[in-house]
Length: 338
Image (cartoon, rainbow, N blue to C red):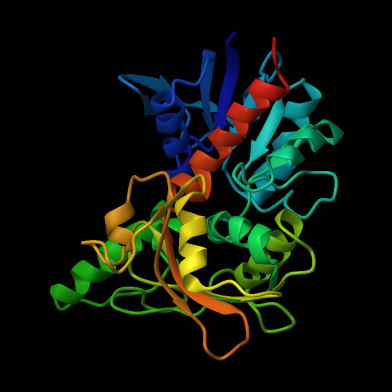
């Protein structure tokens, strides 16, 4: 069995990663289309050893398409997704537009694969925010063991989460500084090179950023609505890879050693303990990796039942493209059998 697949936003960071991962994992494809705006139409994009010619999303006919993987911006998804589902396709959307829709499942395969069944309501499955994905992969087995009451997370997020232009800005600003030039901010409000910016997305009425709000509401929807989440999101001058320092408070006792043992057995997680040669991992070291990496696990002596740990993942892979492809794999295995 094979499927007609379309990738929307194929010219962007995540779209290119989706195409690469589809090829790497030998997804059963009969026909594949790379779609983007008219500005990118006609350009080539790699798919394995061959190049695909990018087609204009506005003109594309979705008739006969089985699965659409999308990462082209919330406004674009709002416009094209209903057109794709009306033609019979299932849309797996990586933008923020559908994540809080009660009729659209928000899925991380290691955490809530059963939620995929609800795709039939609108023909859409939402991919969570990159920072949420890696966190809930780590939290799920711990929540099963001791029930989480509260999470305090501080993120250190790479510029690739803001797109190719943001990566270019970091490169250009870094070069400008070394050449005695002016590191002019364009994509970010302030200089990103050799700096840290405590704002990701817009500020909201409650003074949180929208990224911090996303981590809260998405964790509740995916894992448990009773979990309290306090998120603090920071953009740092790294190109790829998000890191998070996570503090977890449980309803009952769970020591750091017990948590390590649980996570070592969990799917999609690699534990690097202090006793290992690496001691801990950093974003640079996990680029291109599929798993979520956990290190620096320790007890929190300030609460009755609490732990702290460091969580790192490739935001373009597990934080976006890989998670979407894993959803598609479960979709064809359990729901779209031909």
